[in-house]
Length: 189
Length: 144
Image (tube, rainbow over the protein chains, first blue to last red):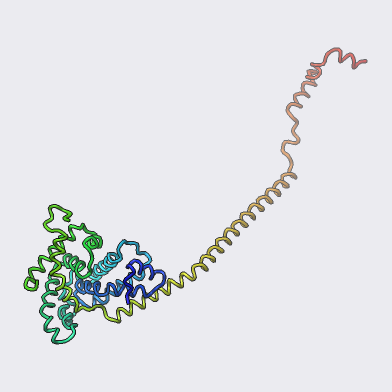
């Protein structure tokens, strides 16, 4: 059970001092946010799993060097660097539907298949499909900012710091991403 | 607050628009559900391994420090002894050289002093400095 009273930095410091379960709490705090961001950025659940593990391994190894103001921003900085490395090894831009293996299912199908039951899946299929495809259609720089804000819950200041861009650029990318998404999801909003 | 007056959107405006859009995205991504238990177990295992390694390093650090300090001290001591030996050897060599020089013939020992030679020449000619300065009274007294 995560200790909500402790800050991220305090948990990381506890881990550095030898409390291994403090890191479990940190992983739990960012498990869903980071994983969904990675899923959105890679377009592939299996890749997201690998990258998720790589990110936390890097956090574990470099925990003693942490001296940033925000752990969240530091975590996303590491995550972003790992995603960039991943993209360099693969294609310059990987679509959410794009998979290396032709037999592999696209992310939309993977996510729908991961739903609870058939009835619920049928109900949610359409919406999930449309939202995922809309997010997929965003240019990587806009998708990155959008998912950082929505799924990662990073502030615009943290996003600008993580991406090393001016605040207005982060806002501009978010604005453009939302304009495109609103057009495509007009019926749902 | 709009940080740039020419910017057509504000942070507050974006946040407000996001309120309608975010729940849809959250619902869509809920299906991703999170990493598998296998991945989480691998992270837990790595965390415990690192804690163990750090703990071992921390436990052994005082021993490493003591060994390093002892090694540094031994090195300093060896250096000091070596310098001492060099000095003793140098002094011994100088003593031996001095002794050897004492037995050697002085190249100037057989050559008469130049002032003595000049006095001898003056004596021969009867122009000795002492005779020249002697008074007549002194000569007389000698005769007595």
